Length: 131
Length: 261
Image 1 (cartoon, chains in turn brown, green):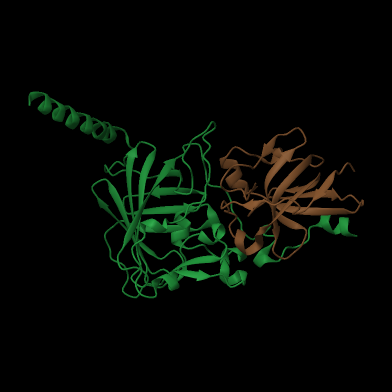
Image 2 (tube, one colour; image 1 turned 120 degrees about the vertical axis):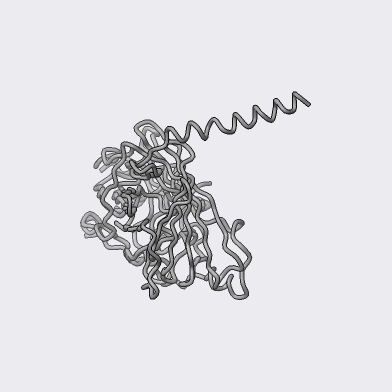
């Protein structure tokens, strides 16, 4: 496992009014940004929103698997984004907002690969924390 | 003076040319009506068409500045504080319908199928549909209140006018997703009028008029656009398929269980 780092709400991020998860405010807390870096363990390219799971190791070696919700498959397709964009084993940084129930889940609007490529970011349907 | 007249003539001619071209190029039915059959990106898109016929969804809500003044109590009726209960704060969290006024702005594709006597709209989002008769019959006297209401269409020249009543008290739009402390609700007295008119062969002007006498002193309108996407088809959207955080409680996935154990 080449999981890298874990940062949770350590940096102040302002929520941007750019939510269109079909029920963002009911499920996620726009005041609780989350940023993690780790390895993709699973991708569920399904309705109503894709989910991807990232295995994260903190500085004490504790492993946590975070689940992140992205855009709906159809909405992503309209932008030319297909399920090949995320693969098991990819190392990614995810920025989003925590689930209201306090579980290790969140919305994941920003995904950055190790080589700097970004997906899902910068469009209105993504739930994107911005500085 | 002659220059002025010439200028006026030129202006009139220039103004008339697009209309002439438009008449020749917009899709029309064999009966000569504008033909809205096709797959569209509705008001919930930017309409910036990219390579591969892409379009970018966007959050779209009704503009407060365009609304009419409130009646006494109208503001409190429409703008409600969130309760903390996801079932009340956004019923779509449990896959309940978003309702007509929110559906119009939804950032998903929609397919229109037009016949001489009716128009059917298939919304990708939540698999909703509307059947809109255009044969001139009136609304029923005792219309049942539903999420999509009772819609009738009529033609005013090349403009399609859709008149809808019979809507439940429900979410006006998705304002709560950008302002999480505020819900925007319309009443069951709402009357929605949509006016659609081609402005070029792939673009339709889409005006929505909201008349909610329980909330506003007068009807108000907002203008949007729809864009035709020839290569699109509507896709499956099954809200219940993998709605992992239904009503705000997230289900643990198998990989999360393995990690925890």
